Image 1: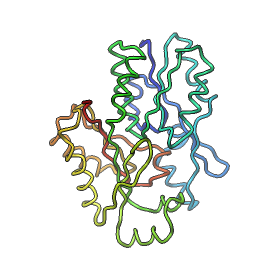
Image 2: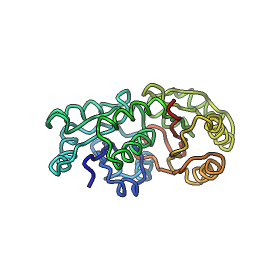
Image 3: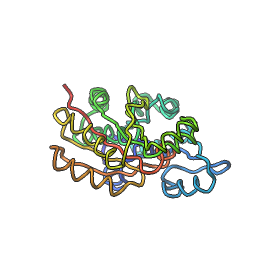
Image 4: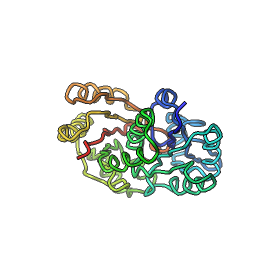
Length: 284
């Protein structure tokens, strides 16, 4: 058993098999439909989420785990003598980070370290896997945090939203923008910059054109990639993910190009067919 246990929250979108194989602790966020509350990935799957939205016509609300949730999740590892490093969803997007800090104060100093990923989805997952491998090599919490601090600015997170419907339902674009965008087949490209979701551009045209642009954006930085791990993360876009995986495997020197499914929290903000390419650049 490792002396350090790595934790993340459900928005890291790591494959379930990886979470099990690498003994990663996961603290789920909440998804709420009116009076029904579900734990992301525990009580509710992404297909079930879309089914509920289709029936109700409304998006759910999402909420951070409480400090009590974190205490409950951390306690078993602490009792087994492990130190904990928790890598959180961006503090710019959620109170998850702050609630974890509150929970950490309930333990002895040094038992729980909380690190702000300033990212989302497998942008977090990339940092989690760096931490897991460092812990497996016997590195200390301080050494792992130092590595994460160097790596965090190098994480590239870019994804394309297929439809403006979920942005509209979530109040992030107007009815007119939704109508015009749908008629002209405009799909926004979103990047994570300084921990925030930032509109990078808009692509007009077919789904194929959109995927080509997303791919080209990544390949334009091929010389900067650290050649470790590339994630293709998607919400019900399996065929497109496989297509991108095949090309990235052939055109990059990445040790692994992995596919992961977006969970309920990410999907509830972006909608079906959202797809992204996430990787880290080399540390200079």
